[in-house]
Image (cartoon, rainbow, N blue to C red; front, side, top):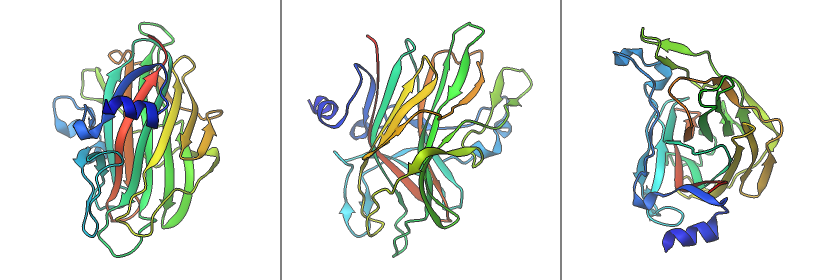
Length: 285
C-alpha cells in the first residue's frame, strides 16, 4: 500500500500512528484558525480576523508547469495576504488518549509568490509549527501548554536563518459576557527567543518557481510538557532549555491535541508554505 511505503521509507514513527495525512486524499481535517467569538463576530480579536486558511495545491507555476507535491499530486498550501506581516495558518484539532511521547514528521517547502522575475529569497519572514495541548483532567495541576517553533528566514529585508521558540504570550481576553469564552493571540512578533545553536541555512533554489522539499521532525513529551528535540534536514536540535507557553487549564479543553503550521510574509508579497504530508505518532497501544 502507498501509505505503508511512505511510513516505512520516508518517516520514522513511534509505535502508534495517531494520524497520517497525505494531501493527495484531501484536507484530512486541516482547517483555518479562527478567533473565539460570543454572540457577535465583532468580538473576535483583531489579529484573528484575516488569518488565511489552508487549501490544496498541485504547485502549478507559470514557467515550469505543474510540479505536484514531493511524493504525489497535491500539497496542503498556506498563502498569506500580500501585506507585510500577514499570516496564514492551518490547524488540525484532535484529542489524546493518554500522556505519552509524541513525534510529528512532515515534508514541506516554503516560497514567496513567484510574481516577480527575481529571487525574492528574503520575502518570507518565517514558517513554523505549534501545538495546543491541555492535560490533567479535573486536577488542580491541569495545564494548557503550547509549544511553538519557527524558522526565522528574514526580518526587515535582512537574512536571519535561525530557529526560535516561544515561551510567552499575550494575556487572556474575556470574550462576551458569560465568562465561558476567552481568547489570546499567540503568533504575534513578540516573545520569540533563539534556540541554542539556532543557525541553519535552508535549501532555496535559484528562482522562485523551483521547490526543494525538506524533512521536519518535532518530539514532545506530554508527561514533562516539554519539547524533547527537533530536526530539520541534517540539523538536529536538543529540546533542552526550550520553553513553552503555559496557561491555566480551561474548563472545556481536556485532552486537547491540536497541531498547526503557519507562514508569515516580510514584505507586501504573498508567502507560501506547502506541506506534502504529515505524520503524528506516539507511544502506547
